[in-house]
Image (cartoon, rainbow, N blue to C red; front, side):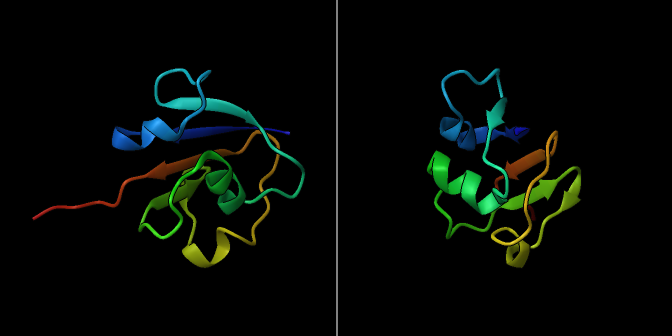
Length: 83
């Protein structure tokens, strides 16, 4: 199935070579999770990313258990910082 993965900033280095800017269309197996996609692309899984699925925050506890669906939009973003 196909999903879209978006990221920004220094995390774009984890996107595959065929990515267009800050997004890539990926083929993932049925039952794949956000954690599966992140591991496959080499994202260090111990970092406090902001992960969204179809625009809604995906809690850390669901990243390895909630299966993705055809056409999903997954975003992995650096943690928000501010002052």
